[in-house]
Image (tube, rainbow, N blue to C red; front, side):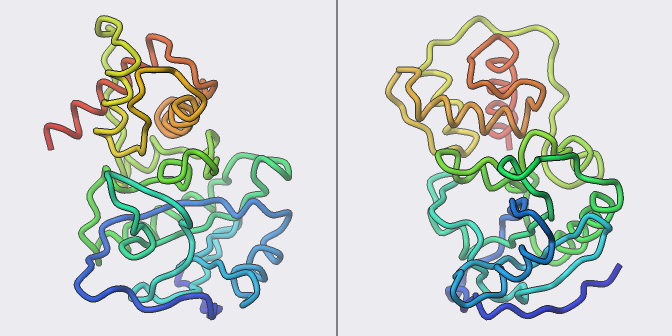
Length: 236
């Protein structure tokens, strides 16, 4: 389905020489698609995205890809804080955790797959940098959340979903897990303590890579998946 244009005034130029190398997925977190589109196109709101995908598969283009949309806010990944400068933001219509979070319908996921393939054909975005808003802002964001099917996208060649090993490595101290999370890209404290900020990073990781359990606990399965992904990223 070709995107429909609904231009938002909420964007600016990208810095010269900065390549688009990140794709950030969000949910709208509002009661309706109409309310979300209204906000993303309102000058007073000062927020936007490049695309919005409705539950029936309708795709709206709000900001041209060469423009800098205002979708990530205060965020970081792999030591970078210029997420809006180098990313494309896609909003998925879903009421979110505040207004009755629900599954993402087949029509919406199929339209998202097609849109993402088009985006990836135009920009050299590595799989490890196809991310959720909560990945780049784990202290304040929860979207697109644990109901989003990251595994499906990865099977379609969009994003990263490893073959998880069955046997867990020896337990690592908290400091080692914090370093592994940082190696993946998460902005993570390196205090050696399982503090609240670290728990929020773990929850963000779980929402993406272990959605069946998003409680911030460092159990064996979470440690296994963190170590596996850190090793995969380190190997290139």
